[in-house]
Image (tube, rainbow, N blue to C red):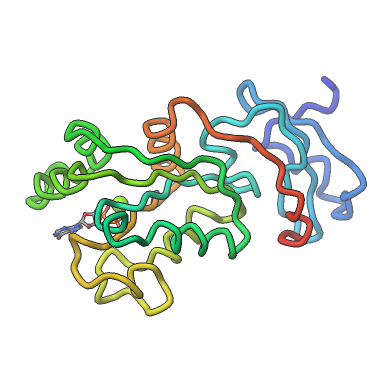
Length: 210
Ligand code: IDP
Ligand code: MG
């Protein structure tokens, strides 16, 4: 393996002259994670096998992961199934799922970046007022795509067809949460899934990814 090892950041070196590498797997190491990957015809990295992914997956690949949550209002309104179904139907893979009733301290930690805002105390109080449904979703572009599927923070700006555009009216009752960048996804997944998630293989991915 050693002669084939490349870090992901330098992994393009072997392929710049040949994009038809579906026939050839390459072994790579990121931190302690060993995986094989290939480039598809669009020169995108597609991970084909992995011994153990970090909980936040590998951003920029088909193993990118994000933290999505149905907030207490979404749970109360019976929207858990609909929200899960949207991501499933899109083709994404659910690798972590659980219901948690956050303490006030957990809410404060989750929204720590907003602690200077006037609405922070009310936001944390509401976020800890009942159970939330925590999810880890995996797939290509899931962080950005997840945000698009959620809609805008402000329901008024959320297009119909998005979760917030279909189900919410008020800013403080906008149903769902989604990580907004890879750094946030990593921090949030480590916080909400300290036990890890499930690295399962979805056999229909061949019909989702080219
Ligand atoms: P996001 O959920 O779209 O990422 P953030 O800016 O991270 O939006 O804010 C977190 C949550 O705080 C929002 O989803 C919303 O429920 C609430 N929030 C944001 N801005 C305001 C505000 O100005 N007043 C009241 N609540 C707000
Ligand atoms: Mg946010």
